[in-house]
Image: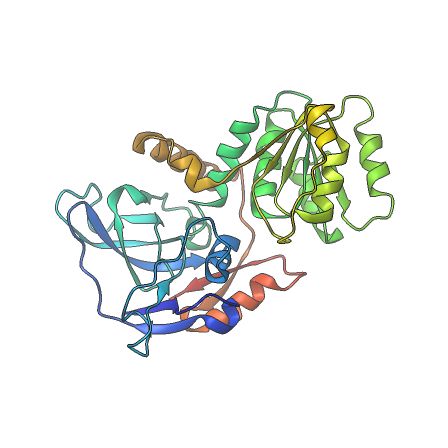
Amino acid sequence: MRQIVFAHHGDPADVLVLADHPVPEPGPRQVRVRMSARPVNPSDLLLVEGRYGRPASFVPGLHPDGVQAASPVGFEGVGVIDRAGPDACHPVGTRVAVSAPGTWAEYVIADHQDTHPVPLELSDGAACRLTVNPVTANLLLESLAVELDDLVLFTAGASSVARMMIRLAHLRGVRCVALVRDRRHRRSLMEAGAFAVLREDEPALERQLSEIAATRGFEVVADAVGGPVADLALRVLRSHGRFVSYGLLSGLPVTVRPEDLLFRGITMTGFWLPERLSRLTPGEVGDVMARAAAQLADGTIEVPEAETFELSDVRAAVRHSREAGHLSRAVLVG
């Protein structure tokens, strides 16, 4: 089978290679999934760069040169179970979203609890992106505990997670302000329910945000960027407000003054999906996956259009995911 791997950390466009291995066999409570689509997510690239929250697993002999150890890539995707081990709960032929390491391969072995049946009406392009962004949006919004008329500021407002949270929060009567880099996102975000959409590089951005927050203030900042835009967001957060970091797109730190913590009572925390899921029972994980699948199927939330790339063309997919201006998201197929 074909599989994308890397032998050392670095730029994914440089270090990712296509390897060929025997098709694996499932063990007890495992299934083998013939994968059909896999997204290119920021977390996938962070793993390759060595900046992810868990280390890569370098396996001897996995690299095509037969000498170097290598690590598989990919955290999610969609496919059909073609073989089930003893005591696996899903039968052969079940179409499932997979949440397991190494999905950038033709076949994946996964614990049966890491596979989740998806509705037939959900396209591969949407189903392959079920287990990360939609689940993050639901669980992160739940943790924010925002209420009617609360004001929430999103950095990376055009990201998939932010779009979904804006839509779900709007349905609860929450007012959402999105910061974006590209003005072309304004219309779709306003249609999703954003209260306001502003560009990060507007000279008067801090003044505009302060005017929006003049009456009540921002209750929450949901930041996926870090760096200067996060620093600005922190400045306009109301006293006793909450700053939640859930991404590191800029790779830059957030500057926190002791005064913000001491005198303004700001609360700062992080949200990482694997850690949050680890605190749920298998039944609870299944419930949130099913809820997210239903939201995608009925159009409550949406994923960006998929730009498909053959598995062997992984470097082009990585370049597409990094280039500014794309409204579509890279998906590996085949």
